[in-house]
Image (cartoon, rainbow, N blue to C red):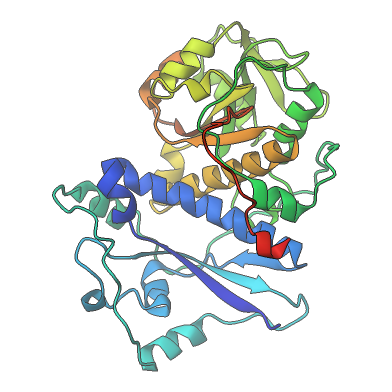
Length: 377
């Protein structure tokens, strides 16, 4: 097998017909999840993935054939997102994407995109506006190298394939369960820290996202509001930006995990996540709070990239929760202004971009469940 490229793109209308203006960021969340999925899949094969950070949207559209507007249904156009270089042979000469651009220019494209056949009654012009404002141009970008960091040990005996194939999103949680084990909790948190481990070894930019956790039901960890500071440089800035009442007491010898305030935050977590019980009936839920205003001001397209980082973190949480016999659920609907209010954030230097929750799923016994990928077992 030779090294090859994988290109990812989004159809914003695929989300917009149901979710309206939130569709753009939902697509960016999904991009982050997809990037993590690709990296995990490559790792199971002994391969690696490199994001081609220098490729702009116009070049990628040419490579993927997405610049052929006449071959796409109006309002359902496909937006270029990112090009990934898959390395199956580490010592092989790196592939040059410029050759793909030349081939696309001279090649003969065939076929037209089918319509999603969704309703087009409502228009969401702001999606096109933000997509244009966050366009990526072709240019070299500085990259970040992560230091090796050992994750805390896990007692999971499942293979990667087993965990990946059985991963699901929980629709409801059983709140009448025993607490999550402390070692499971901290193992999950250690896995989302930026490091040279999969999948973050493929992430070429400096980490911008930190976690604010609502701990509800974890053995040996007091219920309350906590912070996992993924970017050490943000610790002082977060302390200065948030409420002065927060204690910032370090609660783990190996992890940057801080208690802000103790208390029962179940109802608050539920309200902040659009009154969804999955945020309160879990072992813990969280908000991903990113360094925002300065990052976007410096490079507008980084707006998309911040959501990608959140999506990657979400995918890690999904798989790590599954490995510990729990289950995760991403929460895209939340009240970010209210989140900022309870944290004491008065501007958008930091911004809440994604919520997530981990608990024990409440199974619907009326449904029959059959093994997925039975032909592969």
